[in-house]
Length: 178
Image (cartoon, rainbow, N blue to C red; front, side):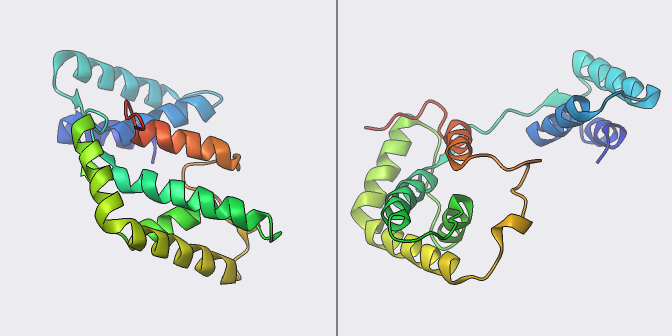
């Protein structure tokens, strides 16, 4: 998608989403030089934002507590596994596979997040453990080459720790562990 397309979409819809904003930022950061049309589109977007024809939508104000629980379980199991295997383990694959097989636990407040976390520990911990183990088994038995794949939104591979940090910063804003 290019800047003009994003700006036209924002003008049509009347709002600029965080995804649209990120894409414009990515284009501006990676381009060596913007064209006159791109500058014109950015000027038009700025004017529309200033006069209220386009509004920005807020970044999400909710988290899926299940993501933290699955990630925590996956980290524990993978740490144990890495001592006995030399296979590459993709934390994103493990987490996504397990999350797609578990119910989401969304919360919009600290109290809601604590409630969902407690509920998960009481009612879903066995299922979480089972799904993460299934995910790891599936990942290890898969013959996919990790070298040929590119992570979402990444232009180059990052360390797993950085990916986890970014994930937690995005989805757990102001959420503190007990």
